[in-house]
Image (cartoon, rainbow, N blue to C red; front, side, top):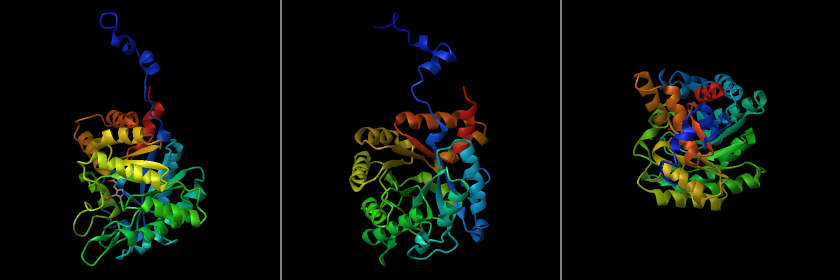
Length: 329
Ligand code: PBG
C-alpha cells in the first residue's frame, strides 16, 4: 500500500512514538573502554595529546580510577593495553607475570571485582621493532614462531585474572594456538575475542603514539588485511570460528560497516566493532573546530555500529557516551 494510505511520517510525529518503534537501543553495557597502562618511567615519554584524553597513558592507579568511573557509568568492560618500560626483539615483556598489564589486571580484580577486564594480546607494544610477531633476519615476520609467544602471553593474562583475551596480531593459527594453551593451563573457561577482520588501516595513528607501537620499519600489510578485501575478511572470521573463537571483531569500524553486517550474518557469534583511535580523533577534531556536536555525533556513530550488527563496541568515547545515555530521552 502506497501513499496516501501509507504515511511513514505517522510514527515519527512525537518522541513517544519514535521511542516506541526505535529498532536499536544502545546501552552503556555494550561499550568497552580501552585503557593504556604504563610503567611509571614511560609516563613522561607519552605521546599524549590533551585533545585526545582517552588515549592518555595511565599509571596503574590512574587506570583503576578511570575503570572505576567506567563501572559507575555502567560501561560493559575495559580492554587493557600495556606500555612496558623495556622492549626487546622477542617482546618478552608481553608474557611476564609481573608485567604492567598483568599487574594492572590483578589490581583491577581486587578493587573492582565486578568489572569485566579484557586484555589485548599482541607483541607489538613489547618488541623493539614494533611488529606484532617474531622478526626474521631478512625482516619478514615468522608466523609460526610467533604463535607460542602469543599463547604464552594469553595464558599469563588469564593467570593474572583477565576475563577475556583478545589477540590482535593477525598471525595465522593464533586463535587455535591460544585456545589449546589456555585449555591445557586450566583456563578452558576463558573466552577468546578474536580480532578477526583487522585491516591495515590509516586510522591507527593516535593509538600507535599512545602505545609506542609504531613499526620501526615497514608496515603491517603482510599480516593485516587489505582494506579492499571483504571476502577475505569473512574467510578470516570463519577460520577463527573454526579455531575456537568465542567472539569476533571487525576493526576499524566506520569504513567497515559492510563487514560488521556480513560477519554477523555469516556466523552465529557475538560481534565486536572497534571504533579506533583515528575515528575518535576525527570526531574530537571536528567538534573542537565547531563543525559538529560531539555528543550527538558520538551517539549516532555508536548506534550505527550496533545497528549494523555489532553486539559490543570498543570505543574511546565510552565514558562520555555512557554519561549521555544515562540522561538521554
Ligand atoms: C595492536 C593493536 C593496534 C590497535 C589495537 N591493537 C595497533 C595496530 O595494529 O597497529 C589499534 C587500535 C586503535 O587504533 O584504536 N596490534
